[in-house]
Length: 147
Image (cartoon, rainbow, N blue to C red; front, side):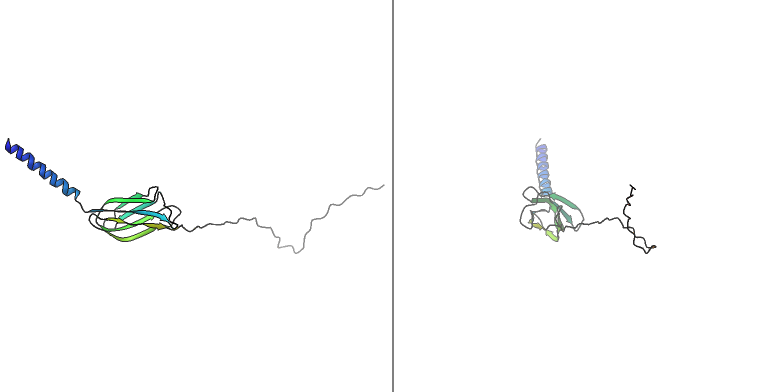
């Protein structure tokens, strides 16, 4: 009986130690605020975090205050890209994330350039090049009645 209790206690402590080491992985996070050049928050912007070592990506979106968080990332070098329709994308490369680090990176997006295409469509005027005379329409002739 005492061996059984001792075995349960040892198994409990072993599970406790293994569980805490699994939670003690080398992870970190990126967070920040996305605004436009005037300082207004951009809600719904997409943040893509790409590991430069493995090529894996994680995405996040900004909330209504322009805040984002991408967490549970392994340590390493990252590229962070921010995109939102109507704005130029922004990117930061070689951002080092260390153990238990919470890096805060804010971005200010500039409006994208507006490009427009104008297409002019016109009917071509027919020009007669074989006849050198100037043509005029003739006036209607009135007929005279004799009295």
